[in-house]
Amino acid sequence: MGIKTALPTAELGLYSLVLSGALAYAGRGLLEASQDGAHRKAFRESVRPGWEYIGRKMDVADFEWVMWFTSFRNVIIFALSGHVLFAKLCTMVAPQLRSWMYAAYGALAVMGTMGPWYLLLLLGHCVGLYVASLLGQPWLCLGLGLASLASFKMDPLISWQSGFVTGTFDLQEVLFHGGSSFTVLRCTSFALESCAHPDRHYSLADLLKYNFYLPFFFFGPIMTFDRFHAQVSQVEPVRHEGELWHIRAQAGLSVLAIMVVDIFFHFFYILTIPSDLKFANRLPDSALAGLAYSNLVYDWVKAAVLFGVVNTVACLDHLDPPQPPKCITTLYVFAETHFDRGINDWLCKYVYDHIGGEHSAVIPELAATVATFAITTLWLGPCDIVYLWSFLNCFGLNFELWVQKLAEWGPLARIEASLSVQMSRRVRALFGAMNFWAIIMYNLVSLNSLEFTQLVARRLLLTGFPQTTLVILFVTYCGVQLVKERERTLALEEEQKQDKEKLE
Image (cartoon, rainbow, N blue to C red):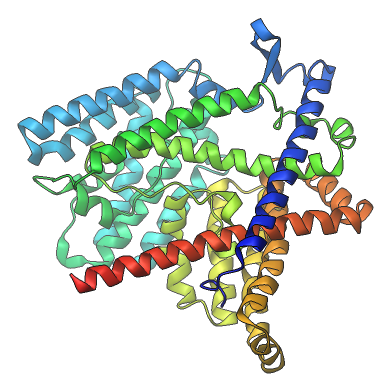
């Protein structure tokens, strides 16, 4: 209710002014803190020389990001460039064989990176789930898939299977877990789709073509088998008008994002500061809130860059991959919160929607969320911090439904009905602002640390109450209203587009 309701232009202008000023003020505090802490002993390991000609150091606390764009940059470019080159040649010469080329190139790349024994290990898991799919029992396929996933997440099996990797290198553990876990999800998707459509007679070759598509292999995103198979099986794929321009724009945005992050890390040490709680506790409340928020924004940017690069290659291969996740800035409901749209689609299709139905009943929704987050916990790797993260987000998702049901209750529904549509939007935005910070705090637990999350919560909710709490809530409220306005504009544009298509 109220999404299609416009607010006065002056009011929206005030919200923009308040939000811009607050972000600038928090950013200034973070910049000063980064400059003051650059030479601290606690920062020595993760803040290292960067732009020496202007005396700027760089935050290198994110091991994965640094490896992607330093020692492994040329390997990534070489592997993906080779894939694009061979895919183009195959599409020109023998387009009916392009899916075979994808699988062969991907399998050779995996073998060259991780060794032949690792490749045989994954083939064993593929064959096991393919055999299970022949029995036509979805519960067996899902159970075996989860058992295979658990074998890559729990000792002693994980230690035994990691021994199949040949050699040692910096990203070995990341590539091992990524390739293995995504392989299990893809094979499980294949098995479940085979059970759902026995008349289509999918073969083991179809599974191997699906699993060893190199751009998706190590880091995702994951496409469900039905979507991938339908798109890759097109003998003569045709590009839509403007598609190449969109691919170039996507590639350009990915490069621009990488440059922006590199510049940002030379001025803002947002990943290093939380590791020094004594220093972080000296930050002003505004800077501390900005630090918590920026940690989640960075994680989104990191995912957007990774999936942006991979999706650019997939689009060149005439695929329609899952899009990058929604920016954390535009999220104020748990139902839309995810950091990997591919895994989110997989979980929704095979677990969440299957159990929860329309997601309007309390008990089925509770069962659906518990099952979904149980599998997510297994995917992330069971440990205390993951258990806490899963519990908090599962609670948040269910609490939203409980509040929605309460709002539909007679007395409260009559109170809202007595309000104007604009006032109703304002009230809902206030609840959205509180939800926004719940999303930040619940996810900060896993993206940073429990100790830093406790520090932020204590400062913003206890020692900073009421002034800091109310100011930050108002600033967030302004942001939620601007997001709602953008959603309203997009909804109107979509309606106009549909009306135009009907007239034509």
